[in-house]
Each structure stands twice: as C-alpha cells, then as structure tokens.
Image (tube, rainbow, N blue to C red; front, side, top):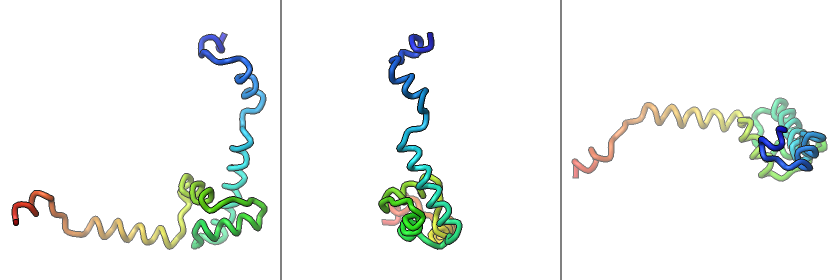
Length: 106
C-alpha cells in the first residue's frame, strides 16, 4: 500500500529497508569519529594536521574530506576561531558608511 501511495519501486525500497545505513555513510561516520578524537586531543590543530592524526588511528582520507567533515560539524581550530571572533568584533565597532553618503561627498 505505501509503495503505491509514495510511488516507490519495490526492489530499491526493500534493499534500503534491509540496509538503511549505506557503506559511504558508515565510512564517513568512522572518519568523523577519528577526526573528533584528534580534535579533542589537540584543539589547536587545523584539518591538515588532523588528517595525519586520523591516519595514525586507521582512518585514511584526503584533506578535502577532512575539511568538509570539520566544516559540517563546525570543528574549528582554536586559533581560527579566535581570528574569526576578532574579525567580527572589528566589523561591529568600525565606522559604517553608506554608499550614498560616499557619492554625496564627491
């Protein structure tokens, strides 16, 4: 009944129902776990150093994959986070000029 209502094919539905977590999702979860363990141990490291730490733990991945997993989970280096906070603070306190005010002064 639900297959007809949702307009799903029978074979892919039962294949999904048999194994709801794909191998790619499972691999990414293991990689994220290795990166998190490395990040907790050394929060000042960026993703490039965390790749090496994860490889030592047995989860080999490219730097781009480590960057994407870190970005998705918002795991930033301590130094990068401080720099971001300083940038945001300087933007908030700096003088603001509108574009129209600059055109009127000309």
